[in-house]
Length: 82
Picture 1 (cartoon, helix red, strand yellow):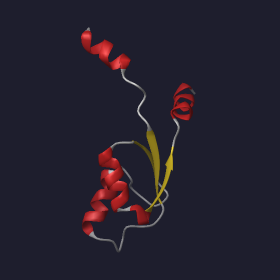
Picture 2 (picture 1 turned 45 degrees about the vertical axis):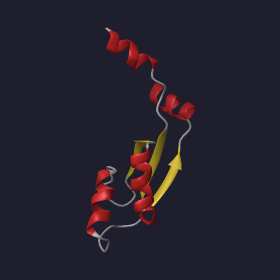
Picture 3 (picture 1 turned 120 degrees about the vertical axis):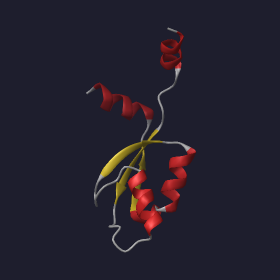
Picture 4 (picture 1 turned 90 degrees about the vertical axis):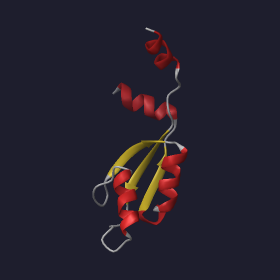
């Protein structure tokens, strides 16, 4: 019961929309692993990730391969309601 209350009190996490803009064929192996860690599978694939220090570091590492759009919390809530 206490666990359910703490989950309800948490604020909506800020999200970042990440798109793989370039292919990973001729990149370093650790950069390919980072792209997979972000959940991206192919060119022009888009995923929404939670904005944390870890994901920011991953985005900075392979930023030359990505397009990044920060989403406002209001836009995220509208998308979830649909």
